[in-house]
Amino acid sequence: MSTHSQLALRGALFSRLAADATLTDLVGAGRIFDAPPRGQAFPFLVLETLGARPLLNLPEEGLVHDLRLAALSRKASRDEALAIIQRASVLLMEPDLHLSGHRLVGLQVSEMSSRLLRDGRTFRAELSLRVVTEPDA
Image 1 (cartoon, rainbow, N blue to C red):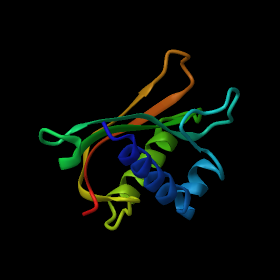
Image 2 (spheres, rainbow, N blue to C red; image 1 turned 60 degrees about the vertical axis):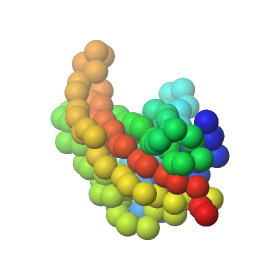
Image 3 (cartoon, rainbow, N blue to C red; image 1 turned 90 degrees about the vertical axis):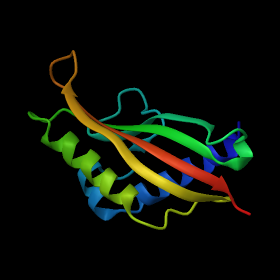
Image 4 (cartoon, rainbow, N blue to C red; image 1 turned 180 degrees about the horizontal axis):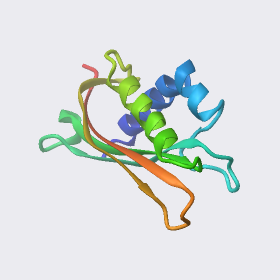
């Protein structure tokens, strides 16, 4: 399985998200992570899952990537977490997401949800995406 395509996709996602002033206003500068540091201040956005499987028979024919982003907030309602994840969704659905060495064939939202975590004070909003890529010819 090509990890290069996953790295290219991850890089493109992080670049697109980090470059947006509106998203930065929502989460704060430098608060988009693969894994948030211990004790990270809220809110923040994290890329939790990034998996891939062949589109057809071989990875060289294209890959289907499943990924999940999560926004975590400790505001008194889920509004902040939802605003963050909604903005991420809008940004990622914009055309021309450039992947180094790969071509984006398709991108769709699979699911968007929110919930209160067990601690009773942290809200979590999630965005699941399905992305199809092919190697550049």
